[in-house]
Amino acid sequence: MILVNFDVIALPGEELGARTPDQTGMRLWQMFHNQHRGHVGLVVNLDIAHEDKDILETWLTREGVKAAFYEAVGPNPAIREEKIHRLSTLYGKADWYVDSDVEMCVRLLKLGVPSFVYANPQIIRPEWHDDPTPRPWDELAAELDRQATVIQTKNWGDVESNTA
Image (cartoon, rainbow, N blue to C red; front, side):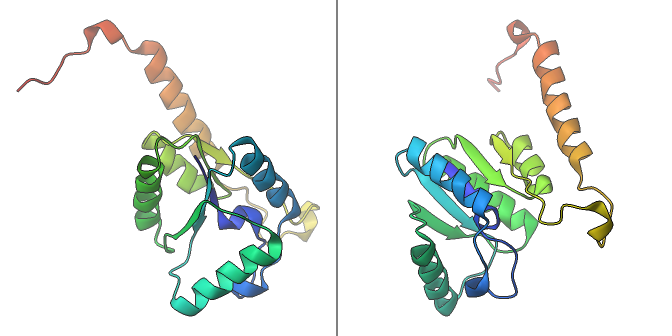
């Protein structure tokens, strides 16, 4: 099972129904969908009311996105982290969680969920950026380095069982 965040397949927009597809994200979705025989779930960072559910389903149908399921996880990062982690275990171990939010990928890596960071810039030239500071890639790199160090330095023969 692969979990893909809606922000990967849709460009930012004012309203849910007015968002346009991200062409590269849509190609990535199709690749995952074809390789995993449709076992791809969609995660939406919104609290979806009944009306928004209809808008989302219309958008998905119009764009040809066939998700095994979709889940609204809300905008709160802590709640999103918990719900995505729960989804990753509910349908069997998730092969990947795909998101453009580096911080969420780091949070889920710490919980053992393999993550795929999708970064597709919408503004190519640096002088066109409002905010020239980069996203927090250092945090992601630090977590990956920490996990690699733990694996390399762990003496698996010394693991004590907790039989208390």
